[in-house]
Amino acid sequence: MTYRVGLERGAEGGHIAWVLDYPGCFAFGHTEREVLDRIPEAIRDYFAWLGAHGIPVAGPGVPEDFRVVEIFEVYTINERFERGGPYEVNAWFLDDWRPLTEEDVEFGLQVLAASRADLRAAVEGLPDPVLDAVLPGQRWSMRGVLRHVAHGENGYLSRLGRAVKDPPAEIWAHLEQVRRALEQALQDWVGQSIVVGVVGEFWSPRKVLRRAAWHERDHVAHLHQLRRAMGWEK
Image (cartoon, rainbow, N blue to C red):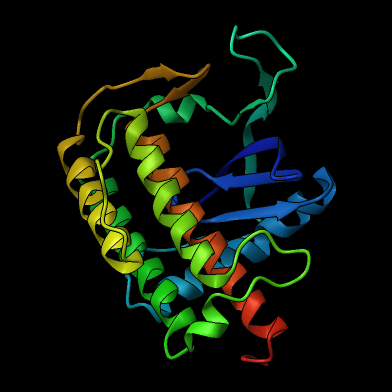
């Protein structure tokens, strides 16, 4: 099989390659050459990760067999939707138009459950002073990262009118309430052709799943970086 890749140029201070048929499978690079070189490794790591979580996938192909089918250039706009403002417009791929199938949602829910298990494991047993410490050069503490994941996921839901209003202050209750809302929304969206424009950016159920799966896995890696920096992980 050939893995279809969407390339997002200018995202997160570099470039993101999205493996379009597999939510949560992505590569990042500061240059386009770097991100393309990292795609095979990202695919191998992704399928190993699925296997470690007991998620069955039929017949993964050769990781080097991929094709960039879409390219999106990130740009910024202002409140009048003119180029060059403070708001960043992230990737909208033609693939994001496709309605989610039951199979897409079933697989996506397994991916989200696996990343949530990893999120919990990344902070399990850490004392409050460690969770709340903000290291030099970092924007958030570990607890701040958890809160950012919750706010980010709720933000994705808000794009299609499904945000949780007034989520609880306690971080795990916040995370779980938003996740339950996302799971229900994904199931409700099966087969639905929904595309809306919000703040100059297109959103759809498939894009919500793509972004949510990426966001949590990306910040699990972030948490492990913080653990290592504080000497809690080798």
